Amino acid sequence: MLPLIHDLSRTDLTAACIAAGGPAWRADQIWRWLYTQHVDSWEAMRNVPSALRAALAERFDLASFSVADDQGDPAAARKLLLRLRDGECVEIVLLADRDRHTLCVSSQVGCRFACAFCASGQAGFRRNLAAGEIVGETLAAARSLGGRPDNIVFMGIGEPMDNYDAVLAAIRILNDPDGLNIGARHITISTNGIIPGIERLAGEGLQVELAVSLHAPNDAVRNRLMPVNRRYPMPELLTACARYTQRTKRIVTFEYTLVRGINDSAEQARELANRLKVFPSRVNLIPLSPVTGFDGQPSAPGVSERFLATLDQAGINATLRNSQGQRIQAACGQLRLRHLA
Ligand code: SF4
Image (cartoon, rainbow, N blue to C red):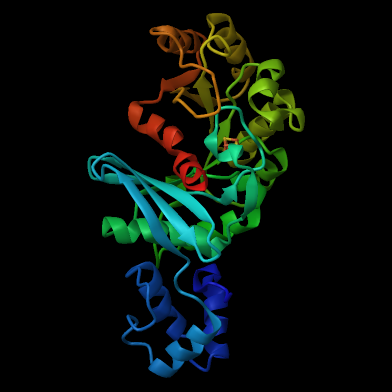
């Protein structure tokens, strides 16, 4: 299999053009075809000499996937199943909010972390996505929308910090002002709490948003829901998040899925508030969506609101996610699981 042209940074694309016999400035033209016109064929690059196109086509692939399934409502939430060149599949989810679109991308094929309430972890880990495949997910969305999405969230299949280099390489391509031009503040990396990844990200000088899946007020509950907590326990994780905020001056968002009788009591809300009040952050409460293979139930009516109010009274900046956001969670991994079954 050839490498993907979308794996290349701008500098690497320039080097590739020179190696293929073209002048360096042709890379700017090709970059624009790729990332402002979103072309999916070499022939479409009309102002690039055919000899250079042919030389590049011998070295790089342009198509990273085909669309294997497309479900949902384009005006609200839509899921696309993408089949990669080796036959593996990943999902993307497109959420529409008036005229703005948020794209939820995958960073791996499968996931090795097996969080209790997540369909993505149930089928295990297959492989990392290459940077060009992650960029390809965004291009698939752009072609489908007729323009680039406004926001990107790494909340699809996989753990982005477990594929750190490819995710960061993809973000630098997505962020390029002469290409897709998706501002760093419109890109969110969501992690299950891998501390070395959080520490590396703090040193990147990027303005991306960081979300951490917490889902528990203490280690005992978190160990039950998220096995990764045994490796990176909550006290150390929260210390790393506080350091991240101190270093980057950027606030971390904590994701907290409410599960009936497991993590949704008023006492647990007070415990969470006590842990979080020592540094600025925000909490995103998420109503549980049904997931095949997990028997947890959504909170009883009124309980989520009481949890929110308790955090609020303790001075924690918290919101209860709307049903749009909930649909991202519902979608994550489930379409792929059905195709694997
Ligand atoms: S929530 Fe994230 S880290 Fe946990 S199993 Fe699902 S994809 Fe993996």
